[in-house]
Image 1 (cartoon, each protein chain N blue to C red):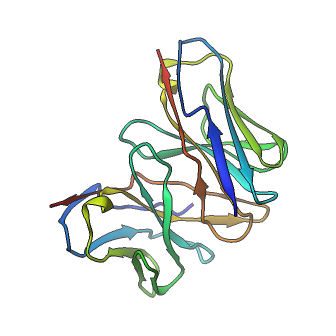
Image 2: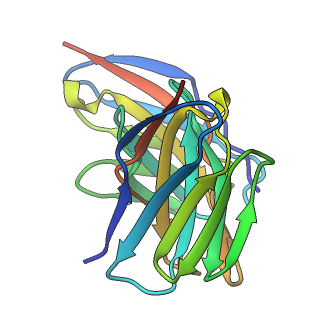
Amino acid sequence: LAKTTQPISMDSYEGQEVNITCSHNNIATNDYITWYQQFPSQGPRFIIQGYKTKVTNEVASLFIPADRKSSTLSLPRVSLSDTAVYYCLVGESRTGGFKTIFGAGTRLFVKA
Amino acid sequence: SQTIHQWPATLVQPVGSPLSLECTVEGTSNPNLYWYRQAAGRGLQLLFYSVGIGQISSEVPQNLSASRPQDRQFILSSKKLLLSDSGFYLCAWSVQETGNTIYFGEGSWLTVV
């Protein structure tokens, strides 16, 4: 299983762009990179997923370099409600099943 | 659309008492099912996952067990709770063999006293 490393916490201000980088040096060929957001006392919620290059949706962008050993989640113009824990996940897909390991995540604090 | 529900949402149990948390998924068939635990202020720890009825894999040795009596039902149990079993328990599901997007339930807060 590919292990991920993220910063423990980050601070930002409303309206700023936030970039959270995740390292996954042992990513396998078939692995996808997925980011989740978790608010207190709730289950994590899917944000974005990618395999290589860049992916963008209405919430965020995901940048993945050619070697895929890292990825960066970009949140444009954050607001107070973006304060949450963000998890970088590198999934393992197996025949007949799938197993997911979450790391400690990055606690993002958005200030007014 | 698919939905996932788990219950109860909150419970306080004495040490040594049994535990049963139940989770059901609607709107899909043959999902992968998972139980995670999250201690206060910590990351998620995978406890069990299942790829089919009666097929359970345990990720960590512990005081808990899981069962999957039906395709979309996943149960987390304990015969005798320990203080260290306290935490936030999350049930989740994913589609088999199509990537790694996992969908989580609302969570269950367990306090063992």
